[in-house]
Image 1: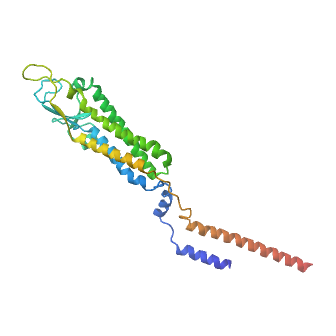
Image 2 (image 1 turned 90 degrees about the vertical axis):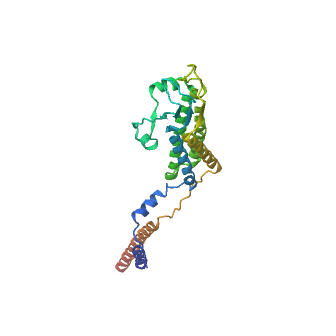
Image 3 (image 1 turned 90 degrees about the horizontal axis):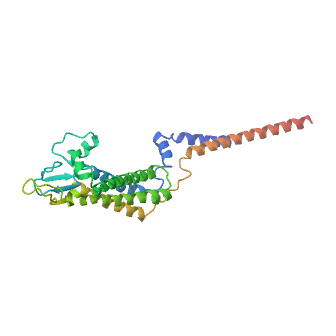
Length: 284
């Protein structure tokens, strides 16, 4: 019987091919991958897109189109129109940026020069507040993106990270991203700072500030952020239970072989004891 069962197990080992590298890798990573189910994987593209669009709109130079309405003679700027961003402006004389990502994402955008920054930005608290809000929204979006992807590829407990980190960071991304629109209430739009080149040199207000491409992108970011908050509040992921017998086929065979070895050892010891008993009986 022992030999018969060993033959069956040996045939079982021969019939089953050895696991490939991909199978072994999957057996390892299935412990971590999507351990919180597939719902975080459905939410992750919205969070990632909201963060990317937020950063893209912040770094651009078309957040607001300023129409001065006259030919100004200000030292800082003497053109009738200007495309403004939170940190950059559109320049016709573009010589390239020192930062490679700006050349790739926003060609034609340059940082504000010292004269312009000193005249229009340094004393404007609203402009500074808009910049601070952009830093906060970008940081919160990055934290949300890292958190949700770590929940997908690692077994982070969703009971803490989903409501404790992902939800607050998404809310901050939504609120701080909306607060960037304080930029339209800056002094360059609302205050008499422009000196006309013709007529009396009395400071006048700009004719108007209008939405531009990057501000529309920021509106789309706010919509995506709101969707993220709703998706996060709508459902909490549940931890996926693992099949304890997954990948244990070969281990079962090995255990059977060890059991058979133990049985063979017991049978051999039993036979030896019987032989010893018979020998002693014959002597008696």
